[in-house]
Amino acid sequence: MIGSAYHMELRHLRYFTAVVQWKGYREASRHLYITQPSISEAVSDLESELGIKLFSRDGRLARLTPEGQVFYEEAIKTLAQAERSIATAQRAAKGEIGRLGIGFIGFASYPFLSDLLRKFKARHPGVALRLEENVPSGQDLAFDRGEIDIGFTRPPSADRSSSYESRLLFREPLVVALPKTRKVKTKRIRIADLAGERIVTFQRASSPEVYDTIIRACNDNGFSPRMHNELNNMHSVLSTVEAEEGVAIVSASASNLRADNVSFYRLQPDNVRIDFVATWRKKEPSIALKSFLELLDAEMPAIRQKTRFP
Image (cartoon, rainbow, N blue to C red; front, side, top):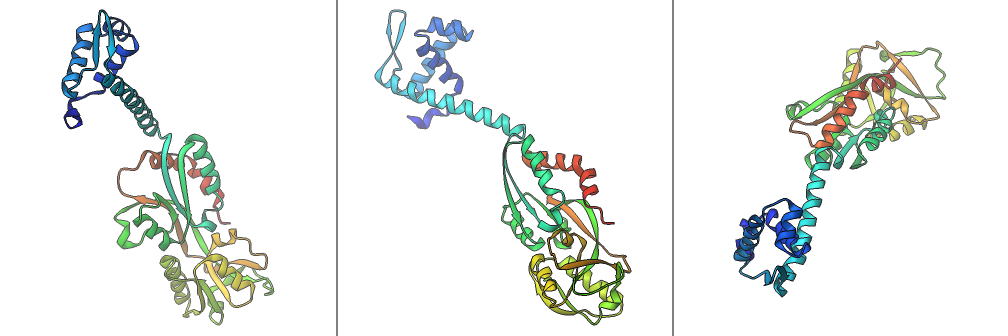
């Protein structure tokens, strides 16, 4: 019986339920502004398709048969669900609902991300946000698993860049982190003077671009760094420096982290910059992602102001 229902339209259900609610074809016609024959034809089509009688005629009244009563109750549910579906689709089209996965490097995103998320939630309160703090390589995996839609991270690697769009947020210099017990009188430290130091750094697997940039900066200044510890998060790097177990060459945004016993110094020469980007897959963005990118565009001047490095 249901197998033949592919001919059935919501219009048929609306006409049928109207006949029930207005207790007859004439009143249903008057309230729907539809001709009575059109309503009669729709109900007749339903009866033919279902193979049952929906109404028993009693003068001008249309009384439901027992099976018609059962069908009426289900038709009401179907129409209500259809209305919900339409309303939901319309809200989704306006960016009012949906989900958005956001990956981010915490210390680099700290100056701007909370404001950005607060403004997005105010405009799109129905969008469910999924936040994932992760290193660049971890965000790559999250993209591959479909867990995030946009990442605040380092630029995609060469083998991934053709599949991603990126927007440059800011460029940051390298700095050296020293324990405060070191008494340094200058504001800048020559990279070459770090040749004898034990270097603590972020492991290459977590952020290849930053790691390779640090190695290259040392090589360009005449030495290969003595790698003492390679750690998988910036908190650990700075804690190791605080413990006087080495010094760290890091991106300047690491200074956003609280490390009471660490001092940061700009390097000399100061000719290296590391990009920080927003990146997402090259495909038609969801309504939620499109709305987020529009807000990101509007907020770019403020983001760049908050992430300036003197």
